[in-house]
Image 1 (tube, rainbow, N blue to C red):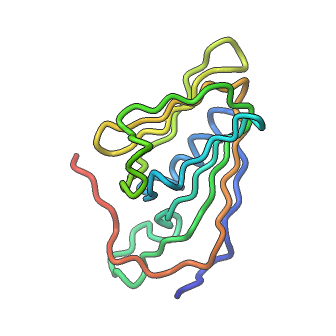
Image 2 (image 1 turned 45 degrees about the vertical axis):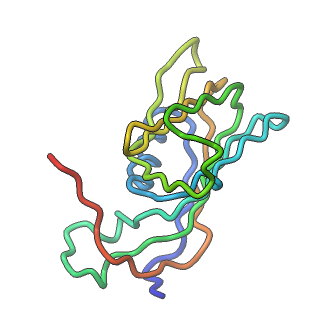
Length: 149
């Protein structure tokens, strides 16, 4: 295991904050079983293995690539809609591409988690209230994720 920096903890209270969380979680991988909606608490959470982009910028050697176990949770979630994500396939692997926000009746709107392969999860929220927390030390990643231009 490597541990170049302490665990990252971020809070998002607006669309600009959410864009930063999105950038940090881009290319995070998770299983469908890592998704959970706690309706009574109006909380949606997921755990993922995020690629540590903030340490990989400009580096070419794979020994510099890291992942960390991370949890994301969203508060004040009134409704969850899954598209292209089958809850019955708990071992299906998802790759998170982006987290976006579309404003509705202010301060509410829809937070969308966009996955590779046309999967998405829409969270109808009263407002943006999210937190990202690294849970463990980093470990070496085999490669840096790449995307077609």
